[in-house]
Length: 353
Image (tube, rainbow, N blue to C red; front, side, top):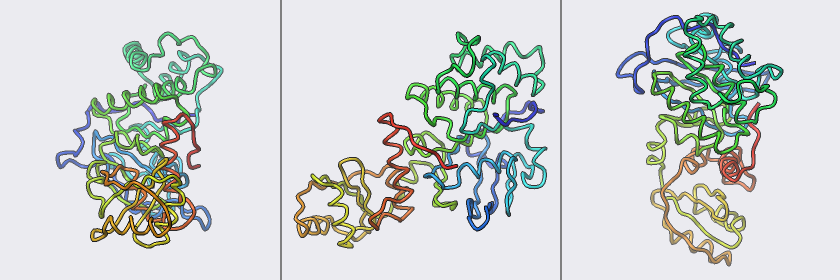
């Protein structure tokens, strides 16, 4: 079920992203969660500004879902804490819940109720005043485009429509902080676009949105992103700043057999990282690395290839920060990058549990 909280209790709106010096809407301080010997979340620390669209980005098993469940107050941390609107999630999660909405990845509404009945149920659950319901429902129907389906059973909706219904139920009580776990997982491209438009509209209204994703093309829509791998924070900044901050030179190598070219470059030791991007290999050189060294390594391996410098994408930054592409096996970070490309081609992937 969509895990939400009672109706918003104050009518103040959040400030613009960046906060203008105001207290962050959300503060994470050395947040840690262990499951037996496994460390799922490893001493995470970051702030989220009021009215910000903040992305938590990483491959399967990076700790994204665990982090969001802790922030929603449904899973206690092993150590550390998080504060939402000044209230400790670890010590007083029930005081946090009236101000947030949490939408898990898996659809959790009542499939044997209609769209309208699900919305009515959540309005009752969160004690939305009767006098305000009609206006709220019409607005939700307006941006979700579900109005013509209000009498359809939720179980009969498409994947994208189900996600828009779940998001509408999450927004019925006007939460100040919205926590979304992989909201576009398994969703068609048009519905993906619609969901992101809805999120940007909510941010424009002052809502603070924290969203997890394995799709790095989606992460570029966020104001700032936290890059996670194996529960650890690799980097945090705006997508543009992360791309501009990639250290070293980035080259694209186009060869008839890109896997063989990647292996040859990794074995040569002339590149810092090398990752497959479709029929190309993206390689990062150290600052003093010379593109001619890449050419010589390929020539020595008998590989004919075209080489050109390219601007970095967020995928390139993630793989370089993860630093795990030196060996023969694909790392989790590289899988996340390719999951993003697979999504654009229409093939879904699994998220971390």
